[in-house]
Image 1 (cartoon, rainbow, N blue to C red):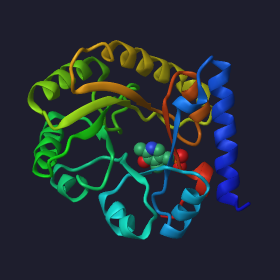
Image 2 (image 1 turned 90 degrees about the vertical axis):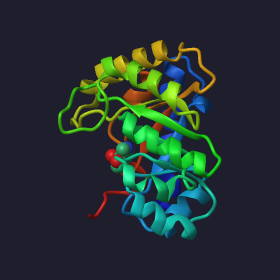
Image 3 (image 1 turned 180 degrees about the vertical axis):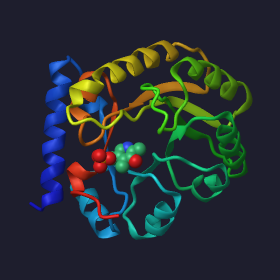
Length: 230
Ligand SMILES: *Cc1c(COP(=O)(O)O)cnc(C)c1O
């Protein structure tokens, strides 16, 4: 077995163990392989090892790789500029990084032109980290309500958060817990265009803690593909 397949197998096993420790079904938790900076050959290797969902944080990388990679679900996980929505609207299955009404409105407009409904997550800046994107926890509900009122070509599937990078992932457990509590509360909003299924949290370093705190989608790059060379 190649290194990539081996890493995926190990991550799946750890994910399952963390889920079971907290009484959850491991199959509820999706492993999204983050392939930024990595070439199509490596992505195809991951797909052959069972990966069904891949994440990229730059529009240009999605466009460069889209036709060179086997059929797979693409996730836009990085900051998205409004003027670039048009390039990926018919390529990705979900946009994880919606943090403003302006961006949501453009996604809605472009989705309407393609006669589709786009799945999105609201990116929440739970740690209040000024260097990070995302909406403040206390502003999340108002943003969701406005999107539901004005954007019929959007379906809100949940929340995404990026924890601050720390050596010891135990330190970010409180942020994951807080995001989970917000997710549970907002999931009760009753609207046909709100269908919570994804709590996107956990990266290579903090994925086990994230699963223990209720993540249903982990975004893992370097633990699968190795360190990135920028
Ligand atoms: C790069 C990236 C990841 C994966 O990071 P690793 O530490 O390599 O697992 C996850 N989420 C987002 C938004 C990213 O940009």
